[in-house]
Amino acid sequence: MSQVTGIQYYRHGRFRVAGGVLPDAITAYQTFGDPKNPVIVFPTCYKGKLDGQSYMVGEDKVLDPRKYYVVTIALFSNGESSSPSNTPAPYNGPYFPTVTYEDNVRAQYAVLTQKLGVKKVFCVIGFSMGAQQAYYWSVMYPDFLERYIPICGSARTSPHNECALEGLKAALSASKDFQDGHYKSTPEHGIRAFGRALSAWTYSQAWYAKKGYLFDGRHTSLNDFLREDSEGVFLEWDANDLLTLLNTWQMGDVSLIRNGSNFVDCLGAIKARGLIMPCKKDLCFAPEDSQNEMQFLNNAKLVIIDSEWGHMAGAGMNVHDDEFIQAEVKKFLEEP
Image (cartoon, rainbow, N blue to C red; front, side, top):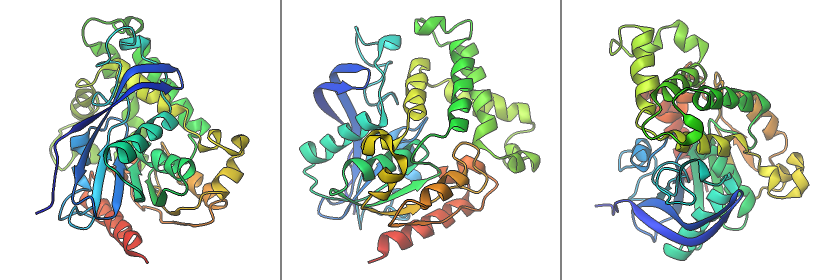
């Protein structure tokens, strides 16, 4: 029987981040399997909680705890690790400092080395914002990491992606109930507008054209889907958490870590072996971005997910894409 822990909390103490400092920073994480096995790190994505990582972790999944020691780690601002919603004054709510991917990965490295005693990471795998963290790992800790797998993500957030995120931020922050982040109750108007705006980016035009939003009869109309899946899911979230995470996503660029912001040189210096898996119809992280990055990566292969699910192809949302992704990941992990 594989070993599974509940959610654990690592206290960093006073922790510097891009926007200042967190006096008592906390990183939430969970482990699966035997620490003697090869270590796989699986960080969360946007809107990701630790219990949502189960679509890839399990004895019947590619991240099998009988074979690997799997560590799932929550991003700052996801509501489990330090976030605007759970940090006491003076850094609560809208006063929470800006946090970057670099800050997150430094914190994750501390959990692995100082708490879990990890000496080497076999692989970092992630979807969306998790994919961008995988790239950051390959740049920040080149001698600590052997392999990385970005699924539906890129090494740098594109201008088009940044523009989309600006629209989402405006939908939430300009709402009448957001109150510059000082709301006393859930700013439903803003969060509902935010969810509806995001829904246009997470699935492809082809998916909408074929009425994928009906989900085989679960919904009766597009508006049902928007109300329940787009609005409803985000109503469970804190608005300041959503915006802080969005800022982290927006600032993604591994070349800010080294090589003087020279993106080409930064990618060319990555030592770890990579499996790059964009989706053919992803509107958030276009496959062209990955194809461009492949020109500069010296030890990676590109496998495009041929799916009409768009960005959500990588999120375990449908059996066909999930089986394809897990089969490719399994092959890559088992390569000598």
